[in-house]
Image (tube, rainbow, N blue to C red; front, side, top):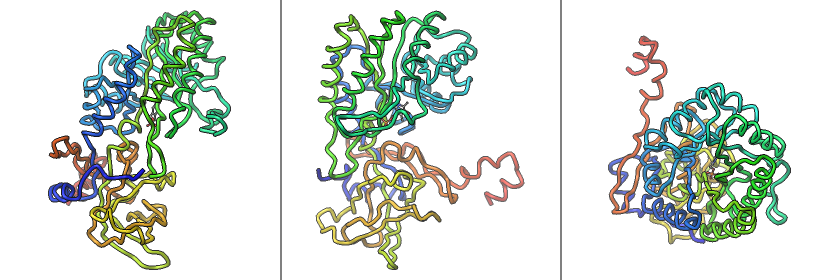
Length: 424
Ligand SMILES: *Cc1c(COP(=O)(O)O)cnc(C)c1O
């Protein structure tokens, strides 16, 4: 599939007159279209709710758009909870899917109406202690162990992952929670990440639905929701086929009819905690070529670096690059596209064939809308970029300003002498 940017060169020239590169740009039209498609796809399930994984794109302006489509928030830290509260999430709108959780976060999550998803059986006493009781609605995270396969392909290795409880533990946890007053139970599992197959959710659903039937029989717990969590991927590479959310949902519906309905569990709500799928394709990193270097290889230096987008440096992840205005020119130049960190893995692309790049060209690095800006850091004293939202009518607004040195030095503010000198 040919990958095209959601923005034109003319529009980018207009935006960069106002906001200097680099910045992350988001596509409001795409975010809305996709959120509506998800909602439509799961409309067969009356209780369906998507809890957007805040860690993917923690920006209140973007999360507020999703909220219009009925989405809540999936949080796993204090600041993510604060953000969910700030966008107006109330009772039942927050899923607190954390692990290794501090007690005060359990307390705060409960206080603002969040549903606690327990990562471990030992957390029961922590919640009881922190909250002062066991919440009436509670969820447990499941880890089946072993390898997670689709046909013969290994999708991921739950046996090696730190999350969730074994089947024996989740059964025991349900019994304890029920005895302590829990009334509405949920099951959660996240077994594979960035899946580019329509089969992941249906296969996961089968595992969780069968577990739900077993847990109900063994413990008598009233299971009211099953959380398929995140993991639906996006086509980062032009060779990937996009997932079809209608087909995915239809696959889940079939398993629901097959497993839950005959067990008399036809009132179970399906929850999701998608991050990447909700935002990934609807953001891009806009950067400008500022240096070219010809040594043992050909390098193009841009004004963004790995602190703006860590995935290529960290995972060797592929992010497609469009040289704006040269979409129809041949990709006959072999480049490494680099940032300026003193760190040789600071490369957005290695041995990539692109059109000839001239200094000043604008490059769009695709699919940075999730786990892009949010994984940013300040190594080498680099500052985080702005985030800009391109509206449906072509207008645009800044939804987070770029950091300044003052932000970088802010935590020295308790040493006025030093702080003053740093800001001179
Ligand atoms: C990261 C995460 C998600 C979102 O994952 P995506 O791959 O972005 O869909 C959902 N739930 C939990 C608990 C997570 O840690």
